[in-house]
Image: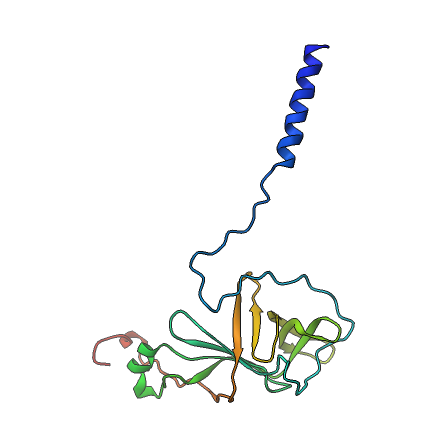
Length: 201
């Protein structure tokens, strides 16, 4: 046999073997994952023919107040209890509430961080309420309205849901048994910005 031909066949065989044995680059497993983090991959979207999710009183529905604890001690909330108005809220850190108490900033109080007069929930699959997208209105026009994607949800049950963001992060949110009131945050910055942070203020 021709040695050049044999060498070519041997190199080709090695290349095929290496290609077949190539690492699949599996996603790394987090070593220090917070309890409310969900590492489950969100299923690929399946286009639904229905325009939007119907507001229901079913036990399994996204239309609740959903909360998740943050590492800094604050609590994040999505409030979808109103069929028209989208609300997102958060508690402030304890240290900030104590230092700004004179302005009326309260601990464990939910304050609005985002509001919209309208939002929509698109299901990933017709008649399956367990997963979908939530977008809120950012511009309303006579001919066209613009919505901004906020999050995807999956694994919805009566008391838990996995919420996923565009950056790929996912967190488990739990439903509140009793609704929490959301307030507008008081103005807690001093009138003179140059004096903010000075001891004694």
